[in-house]
Amino acid sequence: MLNNKKIRMMTKLAVYENKEGKEDIHLSKYYKTDYVRYQVLKSAISATIGYILILVLTFLYKSEYIIQNAVSLDYKTIGIYILGIYIMVITIYGLGSVVIFSLKYDASRKKLTRYFKLLKRLHKIYSDETPES
Amino acid sequence: MMPLLVFRERVKNFYQRYDIYITPIVKFIFAFIAFQTINKQIGYDKRLESLPVVLILSLLSAVTPSAIMVLLAALVTVLHVYSVSPILSIIIVIIMMILYLLFARFTPKLGYVLLAVPILFVLKIPYVIPILLGLVASPIAIIPTGCGIILYFVLQIINTAVSMQVNTSVEDILQLYIFVIDSLTKNRQMIITIIIFAVILLATNFIRKMKFDYAFEISIATGVLTCILGFLVSYLILDKSEQILSMIFGTIISGAIVYVIHFFKLTLDYSGVEYVQFEDDVYYYYVKAVPKITVTTPQMNVKHINVKNIEQDLSKMDTFKHSIDSEDEYDDDDSYSENNDN
Image (cartoon, rainbow over all chains, first blue to last red; front, side, top):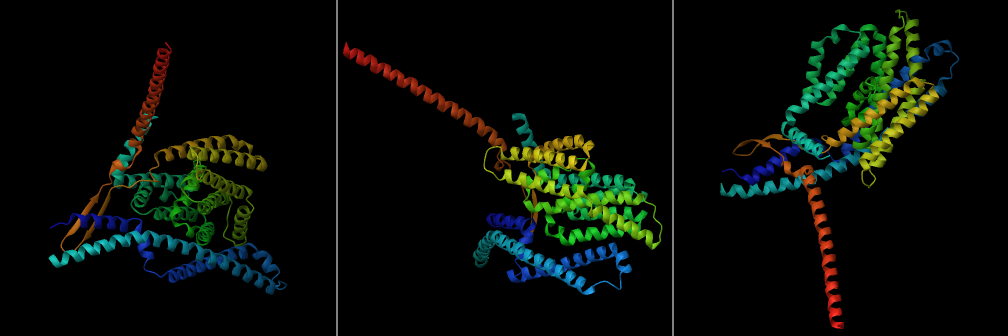
């Protein structure tokens, strides 16, 4: 026997799972701290790569000057500058992603509660069904 | 207005029913325009320019997520530049990577903006983007818009750089490279454009969130005005007064386009037909879920307005009647009193 109520519920769940729920369900596999940490790590790495690329570009841009003054350059100050700016960039990106991704996680949790409620109801229908069959 | 509203309702219904076919077709058309524009602007490689290649690429982006289209467009661009100058293509790749790693990866859903901004710049209506995003997105859309503007100007610079005679000696390559970076970092027009676009987006977004009647229409008008004023000032500063006329026309056309999009609002609130499949212990289910069209109210709304009007008219008439009645009563009273007096 087809259980229309169940089918309706399952359809609703499946539509949600296929569309907007995809990301929410993916997020729900993580704990919040794990998720945020993972995202911070990812953005720190990408920021590092981006920073290195910019450094390479500026190095090439100034290469003529650098090669000409290779002996007399103050490497220590340059190094401190590069490191200082790097630390600033990483901090900004790290903190930024902590804020952004915690908000995102909370928002997806909120959306998921409705989904879980429906799931629970479906589960109840199942457990009602099984003893009969 | 009435026939337009009915027309909109028809379009909406049609879209809801055939959403599964229409979306790829629309994407195909967009991709086709995008690839053709790229080919026209920097079509150095004749093989990529041929129609079959463009068709295949457009078809591919029609059936895949929009990120793929952006990626393909980037790839085509790089390959075009590669065919004339490998060095320039490397520079482009590095700039694209920097833009992606530092900015664009935080707004994955707005990735198509990166592609749309340069294309619309070529079509002379880039002003659509900030106004539209001000309406439908949050201020964070400034990031992809800015990246798109940078990409457009990078391509402009590459276009001029390609025409420079390049030998393979290290010195020449370095000079070419320095030229590119120089014209990119000292490009005042680019920076001013980014700032103006950001201001347009913020202004439109700010007005849209206000709670008064016609906030949408007024926010579009605000965006258009901000745009015209901003670029007027910038062109006067940069001494490019010959572009003013095309800018004003472009802005007005952009405003009109945004208004049409807003009128149909297809992307904002629609739920199309869904095909889902699932199973339980006994059956496999292949379900086609069709949203109840009566739930989307516009056509009802039309009726509603009329009904309201009629109701209002009726109530007006009622009060009028009442007043007449009461007057009559008074008259009666008067007559009564008169009678009494008599």
